[in-house]
Length: 511
Image (cartoon, rainbow, N blue to C red; front, side):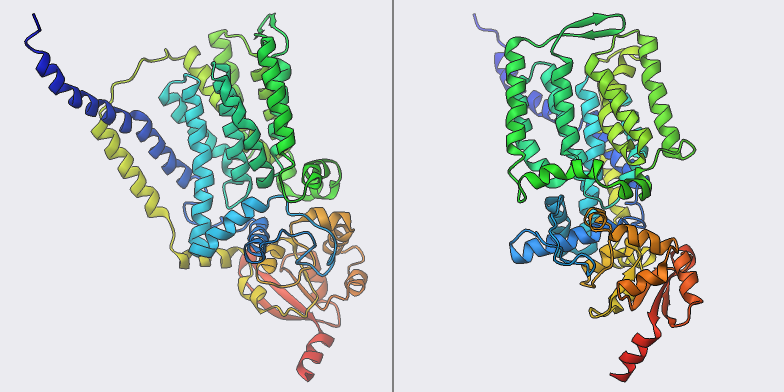
């Protein structure tokens, strides 16, 4: 005898399916991610647009992307400065620069804003999801990802490294999934590295992490607080093959071995660059990012102390590597956030919170909060005119546009990228690699520090100088016969002054 209510069950199946779909689409995660977008907007340069465009690298990246887009050829010879003109040069981040340029080409500065938002939002959301994948409580992952927003402020502007950190997060997600049995996902790493090397030089960090992952799992360790299972012979073979294929695919780039050598050159051959750029300096613990870093470390140690969990050797090595890099170089607090925060979220869940079952939430309320959060994010998107004002506030836009191509303008390094973008020949810009290798960066530092400045200006046949008004060189030229102030722009600490040789002005007037 058939049950009389079988038809009713069949009729209710679509309803159950719809409810299940609704629960999945409008889950707690949707609400959390939308709230994180609001936090990332408020605590980054996306909130007003001010500071978003002041990274000097952005403008020469877009200028290089424009060359590739318009000529369909990769840059191989110095295209911008008159000091190292004709010298061999490679663009190590050509793909990221092309992405920024295409964004600008189609949507102007709003496009750059959107491209930056994609990089910032993507990194924050990946930290949240990786925490959840490591079986962390969703609420814990939300708060830890919020902490990540603070640590990411060191690079939360229009920078190519945003996309490199996306690649790093994807690599970590693949390794974390492989640890839970999804080992076939390891084959996504070689194509990832193939893309990564064309995005940014940090691919070397990713490759080192993969090698560290393999090394830590080569032997089983169960000693005190350390516990690490060994890979099987088949797993070791697969991992070594993945590593080998990844290295081979690194050569799929426009510059061959020279692009592989670039990060090594950065680390060992550019001492002036490393010692004079602010973000390469040690982390200041008095700064809010320094305090957030200490807080993250304390959270990690407290979670392990309360939970009495054993360290996996790979996690411990990653933790020390990430935070050593962050304390040695301020810019790597972003790196530390990507590598360690999902780990911290997981440890906090298992030491302080009970890992919850599937949480019952109200789909309608989740969707409503998410919609409201997205409206807030959209409200903060500036219009083109406001972004143009932000650029003019940070950089002497009007003065740079007025520079003549025939002038030999000695410029402050931070202005060089915008000069590149507007086709004005530069003395130097923030591509310090090529300038350091040809001695120009040393001469630039001597000029700015008033070490034989007048002799160097004569040596390079400089007829115009563009610097901030509070620089020592500006003070010198204002009091040096034969030099005159041609124009001023900006206010307070951003005020700039353009000097010209009196002979150059007289010659221009005569013509």
